[in-house]
Amino acid sequence: MDNASKPGNQSDKIKVDKRINQKQFIERKFPRDSLLNFSPDPVAIIKDEYYQIINPAFTKLFGYTQQDLNNKLSFFDLVQDCDQEKVRARYESYLKDGKSPCTFRVAFLSKNNGLIPCEISMARLVYNKRPADIVVVRNLTERLKNEDELRKNEEIFRLISENSRWGISIVKNGSVEYANKAMA
Image (tube, rainbow, N blue to C red):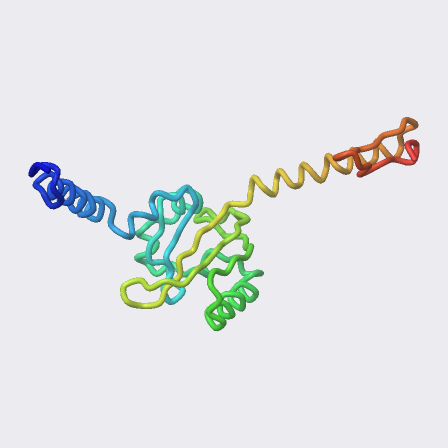
């Protein structure tokens, strides 16, 4: 066995050094907080109910900036008045029970006072050596619009099929799922 193929030779050391340098590069280039920037969904870190960090998707959807955070933007500032009590009770229950993650729906207010239906997921973490929450927000606007459109189409289908003189059925995997009166 020649020196080049022995374990611990110079080429092995170079490979290890490259990995260390790559890891150091990643840590310098992508600090922990900036990883939030890669999410297409709005993400925030909340500590003592105040936003600490928001990602660009959060700013894009809601209009709030780092300056707003510096002015003590509370998690509850985005909740409309009629939902304050319900959302506060849910948040406090989440903190008390310690069940993580926690997911629920809420309509958030954007900076321009637009109402955006959202689903939020919260999980506990440690931020700057203190308990905090990471909050991932999913904008439900399109989903709710699609669900409403589906309901309307289902209602139209139901009206047409119930009032049709022709037999209409839906068969799935060889089994009749639906049959109107004319088909029965």
